[in-house]
Image (tube, rainbow, N blue to C red; front, side, top):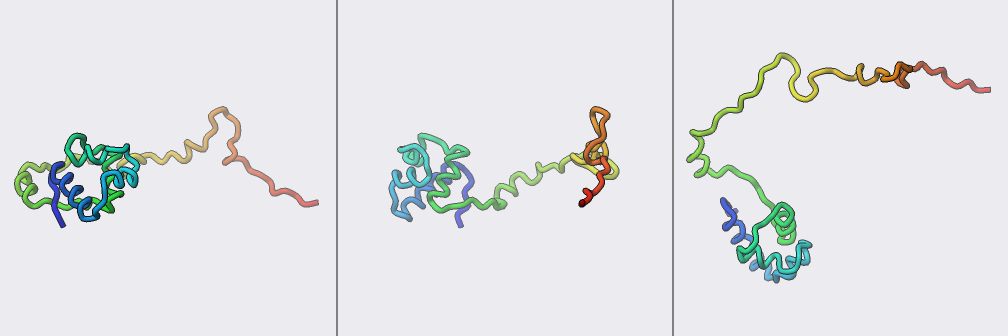
Length: 125
């Protein structure tokens, strides 16, 4: 497995895969759905991969990205890593701190809500 650390290395990996498959840029364009000539511009370094073209080109080449820790990069910056500071609160935390189910069932206009209405089962004649 090749570890890719920057955009030039990623473009080189895409070129290598194109060569391995022995397919043209036009074929990659057609499979990925990008505009004609787009693959040539990316692999020549004229254009950068964007959020849409990144996944499209990976898919056309039958590739996927696996994120792993880079031991060299981690060793260089590990001493700079600071733990996240989160507020400490008792009990629940996050978006659902308050139970709102009772409030949500209350009527906004004073009428009896459907959830509160007592219905009689239908009688059969």
